[in-house]
Image 1: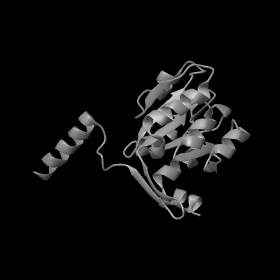
Image 2: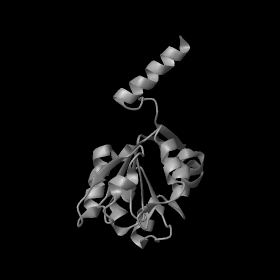
Image 3: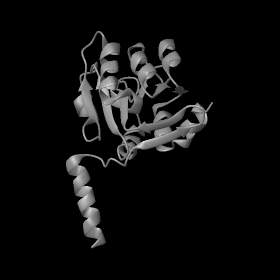
Image 4: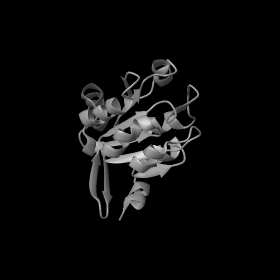
Length: 178
């Protein structure tokens, strides 16, 4: 009987989306409680480099997808976003070149900025990094714009370390506490 109930829960979650109780709750002294449900990521230079997903990202996104809805926002510069992200538990939001900053911010506002973590590295990520509940700037091999650094709550050297902050939220708690 227990296995049938478990199967029903799993099937229900597949059909209606993730369970309401599954979210990332981070209590940060001096800042408050963050109830995170969404992750918005830039593609090029953030989770991919030179047209390839960075090693370790796939596995981390799989783990994070049990708690957060993941959206990858891209202008698809390399024209391979759909094939690159195939099989990953992510939604792809295509944006047009030009006014990318505003379009990425629009995605965050639509998802609910108070329940969204954004990760990016470029000038076109500044607004989403600044307005999200938590903005994480990844320096990476491509580097990061000074504007993105200044708009972020946290700066890390690699995308894998950024994703690890969500898999091990006490790290975020330690970094953000006042």
